[in-house]
Image (cartoon, rainbow, N blue to C red):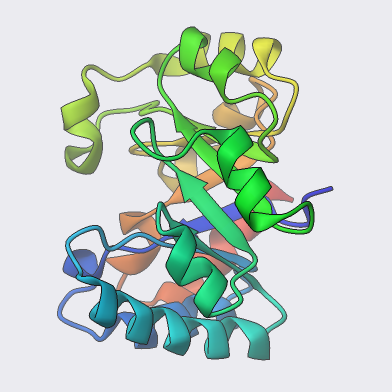
Length: 203
Protein backbone atom coordinates (compact mmCIF):
# COMPACT_ATOMS: atom_id res chain seq x y z
CA UNK A 1 0.00 0.00 0.00
CA UNK A 2 1.44 3.35 -1.01
CA UNK A 3 1.63 5.94 1.76
CA UNK A 4 2.10 8.97 -0.50
CA UNK A 5 0.04 10.87 -3.05
CA UNK A 6 2.60 13.53 -4.00
CA UNK A 7 5.62 12.18 -5.89
CA UNK A 8 8.48 14.65 -6.35
CA UNK A 9 10.63 13.96 -9.41
CA UNK A 10 13.99 15.73 -9.44
CA UNK A 11 15.53 17.84 -12.17
CA UNK A 12 18.57 19.80 -11.05
CA UNK A 13 18.27 21.99 -14.16
CA UNK A 14 14.95 23.37 -12.91
CA UNK A 15 15.97 24.50 -9.43
CA UNK A 16 16.55 28.22 -10.17
CA UNK A 17 20.30 27.71 -9.66
CA UNK A 18 19.84 26.27 -6.18
CA UNK A 19 21.58 23.02 -5.18
CA UNK A 20 19.26 20.08 -5.77
CA UNK A 21 19.82 18.83 -2.25
CA UNK A 22 18.59 22.17 -0.86
CA UNK A 23 15.42 21.98 -2.95
CA UNK A 24 14.75 18.37 -1.93
CA UNK A 25 15.34 19.31 1.70
CA UNK A 26 12.85 22.16 1.39
CA UNK A 27 10.29 19.87 -0.27
CA UNK A 28 10.66 17.34 2.53
CA UNK A 29 10.11 20.15 5.03
CA UNK A 30 6.88 20.84 3.17
CA UNK A 31 5.64 17.29 3.62
CA UNK A 32 6.89 15.43 0.53
CA UNK A 33 7.36 11.77 1.43
CA UNK A 34 8.41 10.26 -1.91
CA UNK A 35 11.26 11.44 -4.13
CA UNK A 36 12.41 10.05 -7.46
CA UNK A 37 16.04 10.80 -8.29
CA UNK A 38 15.88 11.38 -12.04
CA UNK A 39 19.15 12.84 -13.32
CA UNK A 40 19.65 10.86 -16.51
CA UNK A 41 22.74 12.71 -17.70
CA UNK A 42 24.86 11.94 -14.64
CA UNK A 43 27.53 9.26 -14.84
CA UNK A 44 27.54 6.47 -12.30
CA UNK A 45 29.91 7.98 -9.74
CA UNK A 46 28.17 11.36 -9.68
CA UNK A 47 24.74 9.78 -9.55
CA UNK A 48 25.79 7.50 -6.72
CA UNK A 49 27.16 10.44 -4.72
CA UNK A 50 23.94 12.40 -5.20
CA UNK A 51 21.83 9.34 -4.36
CA UNK A 52 23.76 8.92 -1.12
CA UNK A 53 23.00 12.50 -0.15
CA UNK A 54 19.32 12.12 -0.94
CA UNK A 55 19.16 8.80 0.90
CA UNK A 56 20.45 10.53 4.01
CA UNK A 57 17.93 13.36 3.63
CA UNK A 58 14.93 11.18 2.90
CA UNK A 59 15.77 8.79 5.73
CA UNK A 60 15.78 11.73 8.15
CA UNK A 61 12.18 12.47 7.16
CA UNK A 62 11.13 8.81 6.86
CA UNK A 63 10.46 9.52 3.21
CA UNK A 64 10.91 7.09 0.34
CA UNK A 65 13.63 7.41 -2.28
CA UNK A 66 13.37 5.81 -5.71
CA UNK A 67 16.12 5.93 -8.32
CA UNK A 68 15.27 6.28 -11.99
CA UNK A 69 16.37 3.26 -14.07
CA UNK A 70 19.59 2.52 -12.17
CA UNK A 71 18.95 -0.61 -10.14
CA UNK A 72 22.62 -0.77 -9.20
CA UNK A 73 22.57 2.69 -7.63
CA UNK A 74 19.27 1.99 -5.90
CA UNK A 75 20.68 -1.18 -4.35
CA UNK A 76 23.99 0.48 -3.44
CA UNK A 77 22.37 3.28 -1.41
CA UNK A 78 19.57 1.07 -0.06
CA UNK A 79 16.89 3.15 -1.76
CA UNK A 80 13.25 2.18 -1.37
CA UNK A 81 12.90 1.25 -5.01
CA UNK A 82 13.30 2.18 -8.66
CA UNK A 83 11.34 3.97 -11.31
CA UNK A 84 11.38 2.40 -14.76
CA UNK A 85 10.94 3.98 -18.16
CA UNK A 86 9.83 2.25 -21.33
CA UNK A 87 13.42 1.34 -22.25
CA UNK A 88 14.39 0.09 -18.80
CA UNK A 89 14.31 -3.35 -17.22
CA UNK A 90 10.99 -5.11 -17.35
CA UNK A 91 8.94 -5.03 -14.17
CA UNK A 92 9.47 -8.76 -13.74
CA UNK A 93 13.26 -8.55 -14.06
CA UNK A 94 13.42 -5.55 -11.73
CA UNK A 95 11.36 -7.40 -9.14
CA UNK A 96 13.59 -10.45 -9.37
CA UNK A 97 16.69 -8.32 -8.80
CA UNK A 98 15.27 -6.03 -6.12
CA UNK A 99 13.11 -8.44 -4.17
CA UNK A 100 9.56 -8.15 -2.91
CA UNK A 101 10.25 -5.42 -0.37
CA UNK A 102 11.13 -2.64 -2.84
CA UNK A 103 8.84 -0.29 -4.72
CA UNK A 104 8.68 -0.30 -8.50
CA UNK A 105 7.12 2.58 -10.41
CA UNK A 106 6.74 2.71 -14.20
CA UNK A 107 6.20 5.64 -16.57
CA UNK A 108 3.44 4.99 -19.12
CA UNK A 109 1.96 6.94 -22.02
CA UNK A 110 -0.54 4.54 -23.60
CA UNK A 111 -2.97 1.73 -22.82
CA UNK A 112 -0.50 -0.84 -24.15
CA UNK A 113 2.22 0.41 -21.82
CA UNK A 114 -0.22 0.33 -18.91
CA UNK A 115 -0.95 -3.34 -19.61
CA UNK A 116 2.76 -4.14 -19.82
CA UNK A 117 3.43 -2.39 -16.50
CA UNK A 118 1.09 -4.54 -14.45
CA UNK A 119 3.02 -6.04 -11.57
CA UNK A 120 4.55 -2.71 -10.63
CA UNK A 121 3.49 -0.99 -7.41
CA UNK A 122 2.31 2.16 -9.17
CA UNK A 123 2.59 3.94 -12.49
CA UNK A 124 2.80 7.44 -13.86
CA UNK A 125 0.63 8.45 -16.81
CA UNK A 126 1.08 11.55 -18.92
CA UNK A 127 1.79 14.10 -19.92
CA UNK A 128 -1.71 15.17 -18.92
CA UNK A 129 -1.15 18.82 -19.84
CA UNK A 130 1.50 20.45 -21.98
CA UNK A 131 4.92 20.76 -20.39
CA UNK A 132 8.33 21.29 -22.05
CA UNK A 133 9.92 18.47 -20.01
CA UNK A 134 7.49 15.94 -21.52
CA UNK A 135 7.14 17.41 -25.02
CA UNK A 136 9.18 14.55 -26.48
CA UNK A 137 6.35 12.16 -25.61
CA UNK A 138 3.93 13.92 -27.95
CA UNK A 139 0.77 15.90 -27.43
CA UNK A 140 -0.81 16.12 -23.98
CA UNK A 141 -2.94 13.08 -23.10
CA UNK A 142 -5.71 15.06 -21.44
CA UNK A 143 -8.08 14.13 -18.66
CA UNK A 144 -10.17 11.64 -20.65
CA UNK A 145 -7.17 9.46 -21.42
CA UNK A 146 -6.03 9.74 -17.82
CA UNK A 147 -9.46 8.51 -16.73
CA UNK A 148 -9.15 5.57 -19.13
CA UNK A 149 -5.66 4.79 -17.82
CA UNK A 150 -6.97 4.68 -14.26
CA UNK A 151 -9.83 2.39 -15.32
CA UNK A 152 -7.46 -0.08 -16.99
CA UNK A 153 -4.79 -0.15 -14.31
CA UNK A 154 -4.78 -2.57 -11.41
CA UNK A 155 -2.30 -0.39 -9.47
CA UNK A 156 -2.41 3.26 -8.35
CA UNK A 157 -1.92 5.82 -11.13
CA UNK A 158 -0.16 9.14 -10.65
CA UNK A 159 -0.79 11.90 -13.17
CA UNK A 160 2.24 13.80 -14.47
CA UNK A 161 2.87 16.61 -16.90
CA UNK A 162 2.07 20.30 -16.61
CA UNK A 163 -0.06 19.93 -13.48
CA UNK A 164 -0.53 23.17 -11.56
CA UNK A 165 -2.11 23.68 -8.16
CA UNK A 166 -5.36 24.84 -9.73
CA UNK A 167 -5.58 21.62 -11.79
CA UNK A 168 -5.27 19.14 -8.92
CA UNK A 169 -9.00 18.82 -8.23
CA UNK A 170 -9.92 17.94 -11.81
CA UNK A 171 -7.04 15.49 -12.02
CA UNK A 172 -8.24 13.70 -8.89
CA UNK A 173 -11.77 13.51 -10.29
CA UNK A 174 -10.45 11.02 -12.88
CA UNK A 175 -9.69 8.56 -10.08
CA UNK A 176 -5.93 9.16 -10.12
CA UNK A 177 -4.27 8.18 -6.85
CA UNK A 178 -1.99 11.21 -6.84
CA UNK A 179 0.23 13.56 -8.80
CA UNK A 180 3.89 13.57 -9.78
CA UNK A 181 5.57 16.98 -9.92
CA UNK A 182 8.84 18.36 -11.22
CA UNK A 183 8.92 22.12 -11.84
CA UNK A 184 5.90 22.98 -9.67
CA UNK A 185 8.11 22.17 -6.68
CA UNK A 186 11.71 22.44 -7.89
CA UNK A 187 11.29 25.79 -9.67
CA UNK A 188 9.00 27.32 -7.06
CA UNK A 189 10.38 30.35 -5.20
CA UNK A 190 9.53 28.50 -1.97
CA UNK A 191 9.52 24.71 -2.50
CA UNK A 192 8.38 24.13 1.08
CA UNK A 193 5.27 26.22 0.64
CA UNK A 194 4.65 24.77 -2.83
CA UNK A 195 4.70 21.24 -1.42
CA UNK A 196 2.39 22.21 1.44
CA UNK A 197 -0.14 23.75 -0.93
CA UNK A 198 -0.10 20.73 -3.25
CA UNK A 199 -0.62 18.39 -0.31
CA UNK A 200 -3.50 20.56 0.90
CA UNK A 201 -5.11 20.21 -2.53
CA UNK A 202 -4.59 16.45 -2.45
CA UNK A 203 -6.24 16.19 0.96
